[in-house]
Image (spheres, rainbow, N blue to C red):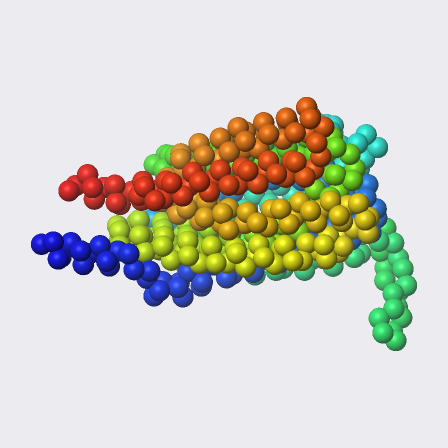
Length: 472
């Protein structure tokens, strides 16, 4: 009997390399999609950056409010991801299709609410964010235009997650590609005035509206609208998800199951993103140089988190499938393999960020002070990337299984007790600068690593292990 138990233990400790193609098959389209989105953010920032530091600061003044709203929207999607991933794991296609119909209903409700909220508050948000007074009018107009197509943006967020829950990560990637191409083309036409362009020996006149920051907002709004329509059509055409023939009236059973997962996740994302807003407001109070460096560094940094978030998507979908199928061995093996891959990828990503930081900053600004300050904070955060990667993968697996209360507690504690309190003390009381603020952010990331690692190693992340222990 002892020999048998030891054999089982050894089996459990093995890494199931056979899952590698499945993980990468789910992760790479998400990584590519996010890479394309980040590339467009880079292009947007570089284009706006040619207009001057004030233009970058005007766009960056409301960036964290965008995160706040869209993190809350994507949290609603996590509820449907968990439900649909588990339904697919159990082979219940009808439940998936009915859940998709309820997701459509959620798009209308959530998108409508945030449209009214964002447009009505657009005039005061830059003031709340402590943006410098002379850039507040343009920052308000930029924000207002971005939120006119909020319904379409909500559809992209929630319905894209629905597709990924069914294992279809390629369609959101293709839609994202279309959105990004439209955005870049319209940026060229909207931001700059009509001008003469020379490419090698060819000379031609490029038409342009010359709208500057407002042109960038219009280009993004049009692209978002196309993306929302395209993702909705894709969902209706999907054989395993199409809600055609299903009731669009509220289904209490499905909605309650989804919102039990979504509400803690929404509270977590709202709370952490509200922390980002407070954090950015304190950074904005440090002046235009710090705001521009912070905005550009955030944009640069986002590209180097792509491997982590790609793996998080794969982790959530596959953990939900394994939990729905009640396959404990697969779930445990998935955790080991995907954490190994995540740490490896984030070490490579962090190393590249450390080496390339000055060059990346120079892509977006010609201001020597902005480049120097941004490079310093990027190199600091590069060292913490592998640790941050562990926490987001464990969180992704827990989301897929519908366990979102523990991530809520850890994220809110890390954000408010460490990052916000630390940044307030450093910047508002001790008159320290952006480097001190980013040091507090890194301390937050390391605290998250410690909390999620402890939870994972204790085995409490896995409900199938807990059920097995209760049964035995």
